[in-house]
Amino acid sequence: MADRRQGAIALLLSALVAGCGATAGPLERASPTPGSAGGGDTVTVTVAAAADLRFAMDELVAAYAATAGGTKIEVAYGSSGAFFAQISSGAPFDLFFSADIDYPRRLEAAGLGAGPTRPYAVGRIVLWVTTASPLDVQGRGLNALLDPAVGRIAIANPEHAPYGRAAVAALRSAGLYDRLAGRFVLGENVSQAAQFVQSGAAQAGIIALSLALAPTLRGQGRWWAIPPDSYPAIEQGALVLRGAANPGAASRFLDFVLGPQGRAVLDRYGFLLPGS
Image 1 (cartoon, rainbow, N blue to C red):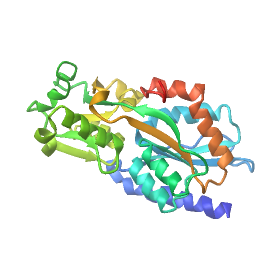
Image 2 (image 1 turned 45 degrees about the vertical axis):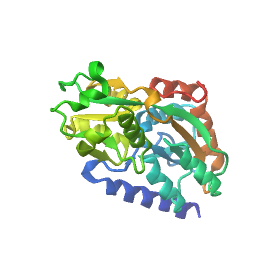
Image 3 (image 1 turned 180 degrees about the horizontal axis):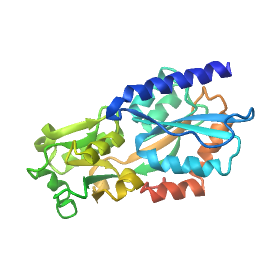
């Protein structure tokens, strides 16, 4: 049974990653936690994580590896809505970190959770441009998007990505949505939206603060924090799934993320912590 489950996981992840193609689509596979992968006592926890966690989660996994010998964490990154659909259809993940807490709550209500949904962070959005951009985002905020130099604006697809819905809400709050809607280029997730700006396919983007603070983007761009009262709170939640091969190991990793070490990493990437 365990071999069949691991085979199913490998096939699922391979198919999803292959589907991303050159455009860095909805899912990205992280390197597994280093450790004794070949040992008979190794436990593997397979995690579906929202794209805004891409760099913070890599740090969390590395930190956990130093304290939890014999546990290997494998992480796939993508849009929360896409993962919700996959898990609802039986995708064999052990643990789900969603950028929209509603998705794990709906899975829990459907009987697909092995415990309660646990809040882990509140996300924030920023307007991001590359360092070469002439746009004055600090001085003009979202109004900088009206500049004629802005031909394309990258946001995550609001149909299944909470950061995309937040971007739309912020633009509507600023009275800019109707004037700019024809310029949007939609990423399958917020990480791909950032890649569009980074590559020059878009001249500006509304992305997660956690990505703007990540090592790969921090030195390549400038950002302006969009006022949080202009969009619904991006409440994020995690759920150990009913089909987890080892729910105890999955719960221990979640406890670590929610503990002092994990919270320090999330704070460093700009996430607000629940109750703060």
